Length: 312
Image 1 (cartoon, rainbow, N blue to C red):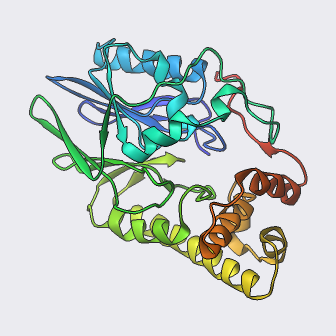
Image 2 (cartoon, rainbow, N blue to C red):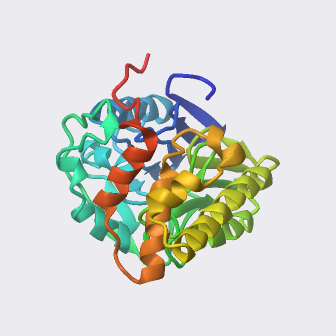
């Protein structure tokens, strides 16, 4: 998926994206925004090594070794486990649901062997936001306005936040957008994620930083959103049909024809997404462990991650 080493790209003056190929499990994108009032970091990374490389790149680009703020777009560890490497003076911000979920996330303490190689987070500790929002919050770094917004419903997770620069037309979507990879809603809702696509389109962004995958332009965005929409509709249709026929999520996934989506990396996420839709339809919390066990079964073995692969 493009350049195979992480790299900091300047989108517009003082606005950066940290892009990490291959963008698969635990390998995310992040970013930084500068202004006369200080630097805002958007997300960290899964491991200590990757987060240090990201923060060092931001320091070289901005001259700011102590970001004033950092924002987490949601609670998943690929975007948050590196929080503890931020300076103590950095104010960490996230949605109130995101904070609550990260507080009880067990995977930071040791990753189960459902991925291969099993990720090693390195010297990270749990750090949750100091400041939370429910719907929106605006930051200013000098004259640069930075808006943090929640869609108003669960989508990728219950605590998703996008970072929007209205003057520069730059949108950091977090994992509301996977560009060229299979989306994930095992802790959210495919219906909500589908609704969020229209919401994202309404910003009229000219530069988009997805949670995973290559950067997007405003011209590219509608096509990518259309592909993701078709995928979510397939998930919802497969879940409804499977429940109607009395199939388990794994059985429904095995009968599903992914078509063009079969070429998307991490296609085993279909099983996880179906587990979530079954649980929502049945009014239960679902069994995330069972969902991952079934995903490994569908995949024929542990899921792939390159998070601890050499980055050079």
